[in-house]
Image (cartoon, rainbow over all chains, first blue to last red; front, side):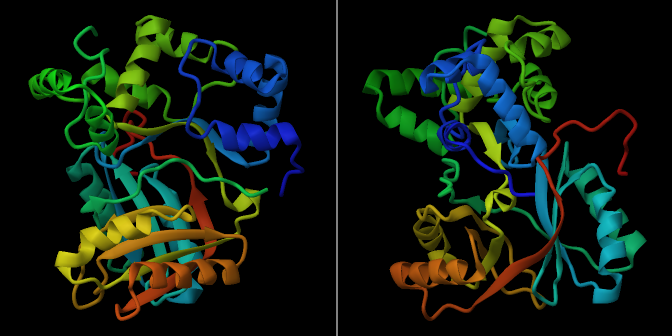
Length: 152
Length: 204
């Protein structure tokens, strides 16, 4: 799954996590900065997206400014984990879902337009799965997201 | 649009505070007053964020189609995104990478039980490391869960993550605080959050 990265890929992945040009023609601007042509930038971005290296080109929205989200956790017997994870994954509202090494072994993030909707989703998941869903909404955010410098 | 296209800042955003501190005194007062008069995110902003929630199209004029769909101009789309970025609603705008696919296959959520009066200070200390991708305070859930400070560490291996952790513990003076390291085992789902649900989606 790991894509073979070219020098151009490294620049596309590292240089524009933060300083993406906000203009009508961002890919042409990126191409100019990198000394390549726009078609090349678009083609590589499409391939990196296809390979899963890029999830999207777009906005990372500050939590709880548009919509509300929470981190939720469940303690699920290992033999049922896959089935429960599949139920959780079935919700459009769930955007991250991981198994982690702990008694609380399923951790997911749910985002919804408002608190009522979010609560209803968590209640429904608990009801369908038969396990308590603990919800840990954000109280304070300390991280200033400057992107993640890849050493690749 | 005119009221918001000039560097008005969201009082609560770190980006906003940084931007403001660099401005002359008079501007600070003027922009603070403007901020009080309108919410940082209006309906059109919401529709725009929903329209780009799956990412921009990889085409030469990515905003043109989005603008047409929203019934506004391409220039207004760009201006609104610039405003939302400056106001701190958009925390980052650009290429969003997937760590795992790029060789950062180890990730651990580290949780700490920190005395309430120390959480903010320690949170800022942890958030400063470049291998940290998230750092949040969250409520405890006693008796099941005593932890109130969370951070996410990414690395190329388990050993690297643990080395990062040790470095953080020493640097921020966390030696005596109870903590647990929850490495991820399987990733069942990972994508951006959706701010608008398909019509009729309800809760499922």
